[in-house]
Figure 1 (tube, rainbow, N blue to C red):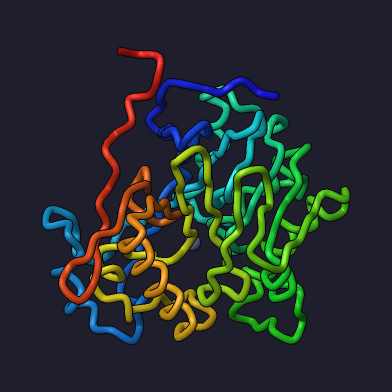
Figure 2 (figure 1 turned 135 degrees about the vertical axis):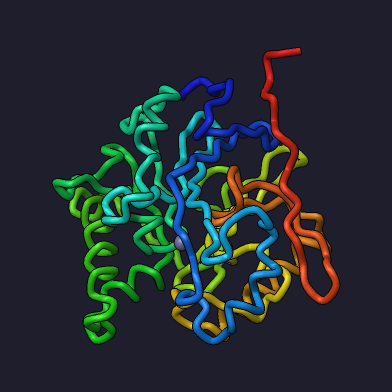
Amino acid sequence: MHPLASGQHPGAQRRRIGDAVVTALADGYLDLGPQTVPATDWNDLVPLLDTPFATADAYRSSINAFLVETGGRRILIDAGGAQSGIGSLGRLGSTLAAIGIGPETVDALLITHLHPDHAGGAFDETGAATFERAEMILHTGEHAHWHDDTLVTDANRGYVELARKAVVAYAREGRLTLFDSDSEVAPGLFAEFLPGHTPGHTGYRIESGNDALLIWGDIVHIPPVQMKRPEIGIAFDSDGAQAEVTRRRILERAVTERLKIAGMHMPWPGIGHVERDGTGYRFVTAPHDYGTGHP
Ligand SMILES: [Zn+2]
């Protein structure tokens, strides 16, 4: 049993969800430009970027992970991209240290999918598990996809190798658990299968008291564009048509259920609501949480 942490840090923003505490962790960013939406004319999207004072060459997309403290357990959802080779990623480890969360105190590592910006922080430069006691929890379809040799190409070999390194760091010590349907994967944490971006892409819903939060992984990567125009996919989608079906379903559900959502590529700290906007949607960031223990 770990006591609940409190207070704020620039790269770690906490929020209560019922009796649970969810801490958004900033791992870094990716600049996503025209090459990431190849089927669409970038010039048509620039007016949607919603950043009139930023460069129009690319959208700076946040890379977030989330630590959930519930029932005396510490559960990390995704691990950032420290070993991805992308220099703008990899801040999660130092942030956890700064807020006093030792990697050995993380009980479980839930993975939304095995892309480098999500699984690249699960192991260190020696290939050892970053979180030395944690159980890695992952969708069966995601595990199968990245371990299918028939799907390896020169183009995706780097992604495959990273995914396998992340998994084996836990599997070789008997700390890998796979699930294959929507289920409670940790106390108060429910897996939701959201396929398309990858075959096993999964969101995790936290329920505590009367509150809930759906951490939806990579439903969108360029939020102002893909929420306003949900038909627009991203080059990293393994099945663009399926990703669009999933994206539209979750966006609509978030509106009708007034569901609080969090995303790995939503603007830092990545937590808020979805509002209808014409034929599309828009993100409404949650107000800053000043924490408890202060008047
Ligand atoms: Zn991602």
